[in-house]
Length: 247
Ligand code: CAA
Image (tube, rainbow, N blue to C red; front, top):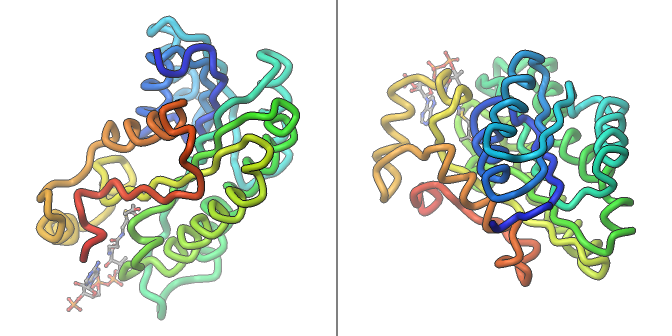
């Protein structure tokens, strides 16, 4: 088991990439925290993780609300006494062309996808520093590296996540904390179900591997970066996108 007894918080773990990652971590021996905004899905996530023999806790958390994040972190510490891994996965889209994007659309994506990552990382940092160890994994996107039509807000947030990843790697390395990011391409999840079919086909064609990604593809990358196999890797941005990033 690659994460035996590690305590891992995976944000947005009620569906898609987050859920797949949480279950993968559970199967690898981690104690997992399932969190999101849908109570039913949190409950079923906790049950599923337990069915793999893992310990699991569930919290209703909107990552853009600092008080809710702090409450979750306090709950995890009181239950398990430590936090080894944070996967900042929670994210949303609110796509529109620049001309049509509303202030609400812009703020929503920045608050969840950028400030939410800051909130969660800052909330676990004291604990990880006291332990002298920890791993923070952030989710950026191929869109954070190269932009995308209709995604001003999302590209700004995901580009920002790369900046925070590199900054925290520099700040926290001497404290034994590694910070890395994964940059998924177009992955088959509820998020991409809203993308017009012709755009998905275009992305498939552009990628040298000629397919969309699966949540498992990203969970595997998170697992590697969370494990001791990646003990000399920090500040990295790992593209997992079938080569889409090559343009
Ligand atoms: N690349 C190139 N051209 C694109 C494009 C793209 N990614 N997206 C849209 N266009 C083109 C359209 O084909 C259209 O061209 P024509 O005028 O020549 O027909 C033009 O831009 C305007 O597009 P729409 O007619 O669709 O304009 P709209 O205002 O109705 O909708 C939109 C705009 C909401 C952005 C819609 O185009 C859309 O949903 N696009 C997809 C956005 C996208 O890729 N989102 C990714 C979400 S998944 C994700 O974010 C996960 C991740 O990390 C990758």
